Length: 309
Ligand SMILES: Nc1ncnc2c1ncn2[C@@H]1O[C@H](COP(=O)(O)OP(=O)(O)OP(=O)(O)O)[C@@H](O)[C@H]1O
Ligand SMILES: [Mg+2]
Image (cartoon, rainbow, N blue to C red):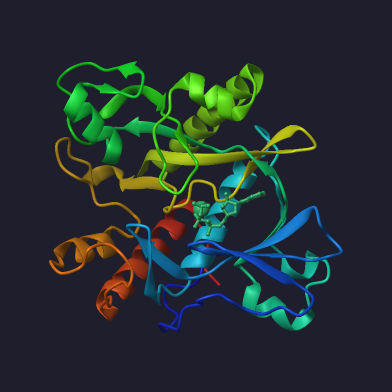
């Protein structure tokens, strides 16, 4: 599998909601549609759509190929870090998904992930190498970040002295939690320590890899789960939706670096004075969608290096 081609004419995006005979469409996330099949109660089919959410509201428009980019980047990183922790995902090749009717293979190729169902650990494992977003806001207000004291004089987009772990709840609105609360939610000291250690290792390896490609991994969030009591990595992995990637040569301390995600959409939405960030969403101009799509394709190409389908 590879990323979608930047040269492809702008085709309509995939909004999801497909009916697959014999399958139960049981959950519609902001981005992913989840299906289960009665023959495989321990597995599920995750379909990454081209839906676009911003400020937690799903837009009417889709960004063509966005779901394929997210799936492809996740697959790339899962393969890179497979020696550090097992993953829940089984395959992204539609022909290897049991009981998936042949006529859906083409439509779902690149979007479908066949995965074991894990008992989710309801903590977002957030790791940060740079001060950005809520991390920057917290430091600006208190001079600290989560339970870590930081040196004075850091600026927006400064590199942190070390990669820091700032867990949050996994809920409708994610709230920062202390390490003690994270341990409680994870369920044991031992698993919490393992998650912490593995997440740091994955982050550092990936940050080195990204840096060799001219991109800084500023932060990311991981999700873990348990299968037969054993910890596994679930969900998307170091995609532009779950991470901040910055072009290394455009990072200036004190300024907001351009990121490889839907910042173009957010900037457009922030420019509107008459939208209260609640549904219904406003119309997103075609130009904003086109630029966003290019940005996703660009980071896909940079990271995974292969030419899109
Ligand atoms: N292997 C797995 N086992 C159990 N749950 C999983 C697994 N992989 C992913 N998930 C969950 O499936 C959902 C994927 O849907 P999607 O990414 O669209 O959700 P979302 O809109 O981001 O919502 P959420 O805030 O719940 O992540 C997420 O809730 C994620 O935690
Ligand atoms: Mg998600």
